[in-house]
Length: 343
Image 1: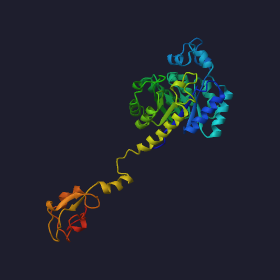
Image 2: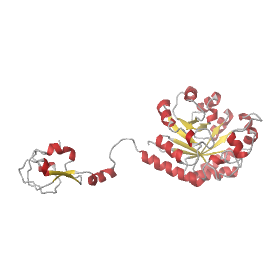
Image 3: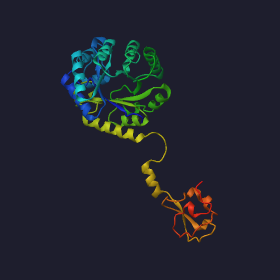
Image 4: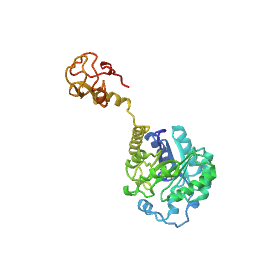
């Protein structure tokens, strides 16, 4: 691949509103080898009406039926954002966040984040999409629940707001927590690469690490995965998250898969060239061949190593005259034959 896969540890709301837990998530993300740790920036009143129900997975994880009340407990203040950003700077991991309002975009830009991410749920929120795009930062656009028509529409808004789609990465995503294997549709990554004309990544909500590795093999340039310090903690997203050791294993796997992909050009590697010398064959003398004799098929065999004339040249060798005697078991070279050049 041209560039390493960009791995995002999605801290999200797994801090449970606790700054200390948020900072520990940043440490865990850095230690696991993630390139960035991402949070979510919102105020409950900007996002949801009081009394709005929780999603089934949220109710299952938290026992909470009121989405407004749940989100209120998961907000991060501006001061907490500043503390998290400063901590990430000090330990050497990139901090950024998903804004859920225009004010949240402005806050993150003031904080100096290097990129923004739009949530799957905000893909059809035109005003927010356009405002985030107008910040002219690299932009990740998640597409859970979306049709291709909705994705193209959002890309049109982004292009109009910033004048181009440079720096835009669209993330394939399945918005279920956890997402069952049969719902992941990872082949959509290839379809999106073919049809959208922008970089494609993957935001994963499945259990385990297999889906992110498969996504990288399919061409994903960004992988996002939820990180928690303990899946048993209360909160809506812990159950579909990786713990630090698992996240570290995933990152190591992504780096290996990326290295395995190569440049796509089918050609022998240096290691294979060494192997070819012992694994492929040459044309060899099957019997003692005197000097000045026209070679016949019965005089030849194809044997390892591949240090002489390749078997593909068999028909060109037949009828050539030996310039000197050739002992049985000798690998033939062109210079042993009259008119014997490799051209």
